[in-house]
Structure formats: structure tokens, C-alpha cells
Length: 322
Image 1 (cartoon, one colour):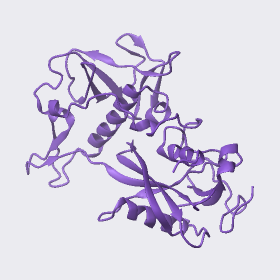
Image 2 (tube, helix red, strand yellow):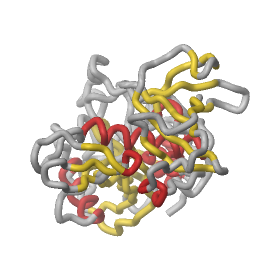
Image 3 (cartoon, one colour):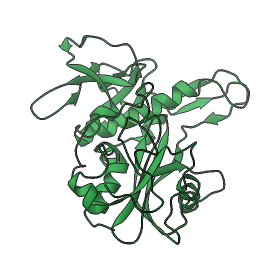
Image 4 (cartoon, one colour):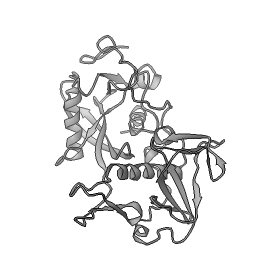
């Protein structure tokens, strides 16, 4: 593979050890569509019902158990995996109301792995990373919401104002500080993820040391206080690979509840010197790749999985979409 000026080669960046590597599922390209797969949703979040004494309206509720590893019970079938919901007469203690679809209320609760749910055997326990690209729209949207809200509860058991243990209200969507009376709402951390291209046929892909050898993706980083998303794109690209960018364009967004991010996807065009200057604390290796290399498989050994917005943006760019 030819490496453009300023890029790195395998000899410059030997693959890291597998110990502690982030495990990503293997998958092909993203499914055709205008939105990333985890941005799909087919249910009504019923936000007004959260303030009612019983948000289910007295109806039986389907409840999803999420264990401490963020995995859930799954049924495997000819049409693909499906979430295995428990049926309950009312909203269980500690459960968070997720909304409804076709008149059926849904909720999620932390719990332990079981071999069966309501007498139905569990085929496997799996997480959003593994399942997200293969679930139907209803299950995918509910699972992303369930993981995100339960992670918020796990990380916000005590008030940042007084240190007091919070009380849960509004069907799991508010935590109250019992000493100050302040209401604490779920928070989402905005992050930018961007494909940097040269205005022609090349784009920049990089890799972090914790990733498996051969895995490359587009650049990403968190939005800082007082910063626009577009400003974060330009800053992160400059910090990670030393490029100046222009023509920053929004593509799509995707929830990424690991634990509480919203990924804002962009493309940006490199402006000026194309030499890559890497921040070794952020990026272990980065290179320019052509569309043909990515299309033919002659580029990175592994690209991001279909569940990620990174793959959605890469596939759009390879297909020639703006």
C-alpha cells in the first residue's frame, strides 16, 4: 500500500498487544438509509406520561432486564435477533418507563442474568454493540434508550450539589436532591466524529492503541464547554493529526450510550499542508486512504462495525455522497 507524504507505515507503528483491547463486533457495511442504525426508533417516548402516578395507564408492561455488563436477553430467529421482554402486570420497582408502541408500554430495569424469561429460554445475552445493527427499529430504539437512561442512573446516585443520595421521580426520568430540592435530569455529552478528506479521493483514518491491530476509523472527540460542534471538529482534527480544515458539513447524529454520548457526524476538507502530525497520546497511527482502497478492501484490515456512525459516514463517502 502506498502511504502519502506525512502518513505513517506499519513499520513506524507496530501493532499493540491484544491485552486490554476494545472489543468491537465484526460486520460488513451499514444498511442503506439516511440515518445511522442506532438512530432508528419506532416507539413514542410518551414524555407526558412520565409525570403520571402510573405512566402505563394500568396496562401490562413489557420489561427488559439489563445486567451489569449492559447485556440483555435475546431470542435468535430466522428474521434475526429479537429482545426477550418480560411481561409484568405493572411497572416494577426501580424500572424506568421507556414509552409505548402500538398501545404497549415498555420499561427497563437493572437485573441479573437468567436462563429464562417468563419461562422462555434465553438464547444469548448480548449488548448494544453486538445487536444494534441487526435489531428491528422498535427493539433498536428501545435498547439504545434503555442503556442510556440506566447508565445515567448508575453514575448519578448522589447529588453533585449536596452529596446526598437522590430520590427517583417521574418514572425514572428525574432524580431529586432531598436536601436542596433540585431536580437532576439525564445528561448527554456531545461528541463530534468527522471524516476528513482532501476534496478529492483521499480521506484520513486513524487508530488508537487500545483498538485491535488493523482497526482504523475516522477521528472523534468531545465538545468542550463554550464550543460549537463545528469548532470542536476543527480543534480535534488539529490536535489529533495536525491538519487545518474547512468546509465542515453536518451529516447525521447517533446516540452512543457508552455511557452517555451523542455523536454528531461531520465531514471536513483538509486545508493547506496535508502532512499528518500525530498526537501520540490520542492517535497511534493515521494515514491517508483512497476511495478505491476502502472500496476494494486494500485499505485498513478492519473498519468500524455497522452499528457505529463512523461506518455510516465512511460508507457514504466511499459511495460518493457529500
